[in-house]
Image (cartoon, rainbow, N blue to C red; front, side, top):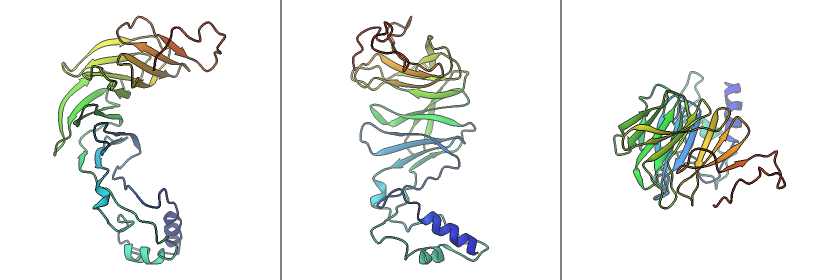
Length: 257
């Protein structure tokens, strides 16, 4: 009992914020977070056991639950009330903890999910991608429903929809095991183009926030590359930490952001 009390005190002292606390209901490590760009209100998360959750970031204002709500009675006879009373002296009177429970959840996926993203212009839609090689398109309305899925055949590490002004938001780019990047059409549910150029697995991708046709990628080959999806024969720029301004390969062309 004494050991559990000591552990409880130590846990109570590990504070990330003095005003807010978001309790995760994920059963595994969280792999990705994404906040919708339309209102900035809804948080999307996914984890390594295939769980996906949606949180309302404004909900904690009306959700004033007591701290450490997950602490249940156990065989040691120490319940949540005992825990709170014992740590009351150690807690700052200005600290408040709110448990923000999800407004939408997906538990049916049987493989780890590595990426998730809200649709740029509609917070009612989002995508996920994971180890099973599928990009799934979801309707966030309660209950959350699967609309369509795109099968790529390799473990997906990152997927992303462009969000620059004038961008085609029906496109989703995906990368993972292998040196290639796939461009998919969410309207038809198929992979339409393959981007080759990296020499090792591609770990991450990101769209330019200002250039609707510019995609960047980072790989195990130690390079970051930029691509113009209108011409996929070669990359437009290589960002390499080993190169310097005097190297002829430093800048392949003027790269706008």
